Amino acid sequence: MTTPVSSKRIAMACAMAISCAWLSPPVAWAQDSPEEVRRQLEALGENIEQTQARLEGTRDARDEAQRELREVETRLAETHQRLIGLQREQDQLDQEVAELKKRRQTLEIERRHQREALAKQLNALYRLGPTPQLKLLLNQSDPARLDRLQQYLNHLNQARQQRLDALAKLEDQLDETQRALQSHQARLDDLGDELTARRETLSEQRGKRETILAQFKERYTTQRAKLAALTDDRENAEQLLDRMRERLERLDQAPPSTQIEQTQGDLPWPVQGDMLAGYGNGDGVDRNGILIGAASGTPVSAVHAGRVVFADWMRGFGNLVIIDHGDNIMTLYAHLQRFAVGVGEQVERGATIAAVGDSGGRDTPALYFEVRENGDPIDPGDWIARR
Image 1: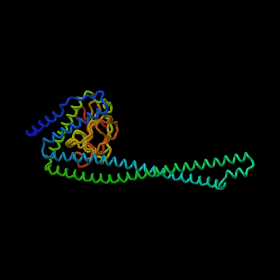
Image 2: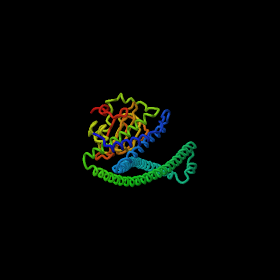
Image 3: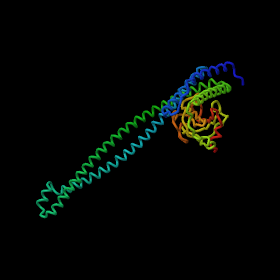
Image 4: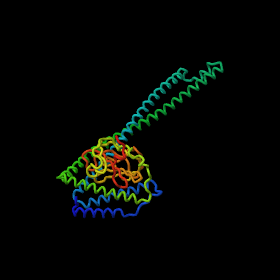
């Protein structure tokens, strides 16, 4: 298929714009701290973002909708992440409130027992009269017996004081528990209000996203126009990923080996679900990997240990996580609802890194999974275990 002259000029202009963004000197990672590595990778992500903006600036009004889509899907991811955090905090507080109530019940039972025991002691003292020491001295002629009774009286007084001290301590603990319960309940009320507000925000953001997607569909008057747009998205993504690989290769210290090649053909699936599109059969950016259908919010797992080098929105992919496993192997996880990891983090095999979503303009939730070797996409079926 012959590329129109105008498209060639645009492509050349894009390539020049991208090249300018990557002319800064290589960054050394040798002996760098995890914080420094994270800073450098975040800078890499910022360069990718700037390059995306330059690419979009060379195209037509369709890219204004793309920018709007990026903005709303980024906010959706943040809202989802905040909702998850709020729900976890609420669950934790609910558990703590239950434990506090159980503790209060235990303290109240102990207080009742202490009061009953103290009442018995006071009753025993009452039976001895208002001046028991004097009565003992006047009524007892046996000094040994007198001494024993005095010891009993002293023990009774000591036990009474201990009960009184224990009761005072229990009262303090009950007051402290009640204050903690009130504080927790107030926080739970605040969380409930924020959760309600966040869910309303989420609904508004989803509505805005649907409006943007409807605008896309209006522009795709023919299947050919839609195919051209998807092809454009894939070319855009390839340019960005190529520049990222080049930048990573210029780093003085290569990522540490994770022996991923030894696991070829035995890697776990990043998510369980139906295969919607195999390698080479997907549309747009999904053509270079596999598309796995799963419910929105389903946890996505890293297939192997590695380091997160990208966690951001990218045109076509939507919310995207890229993990560098060393040995020139990277895995990509796209169309995510939200992120569970950040740039620079080390992840282990099976660690949750994100959740399934429909970002990138998809109509239905799914996970796009891709494997790249030396920057080139390869069939993930050669790496993940058969099922």
